[in-house]
Image (tube, rainbow, N blue to C red):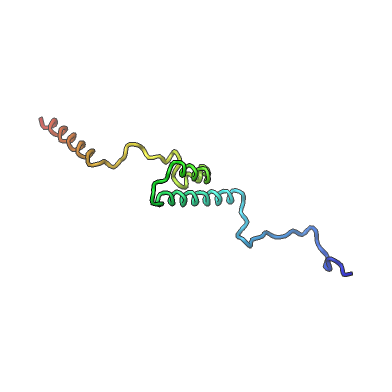
Length: 114
């Protein structure tokens, strides 16, 4: 019977990194990549709900939030965290606000001329 291993085997020799599917990632790099993937998937799913031809229900939007749990970093990537909430007061005045501002300036100018 032939020997199982014809060549001598060095048990102290280790196998090199397996890079068939890309470079070896550190834990931090892997977490960042996973967060980017989750953020993209969440964004695509929300886009699908916005362009679906009908308004999405709160239940459907809640399902998206449960399915794609986002970390703080992923929320920051999407700009949906609490720090990204738009203020109630909008900086672009409407026509009605412009009319009020114009009237106010007219009153101020009249007072300054008298």
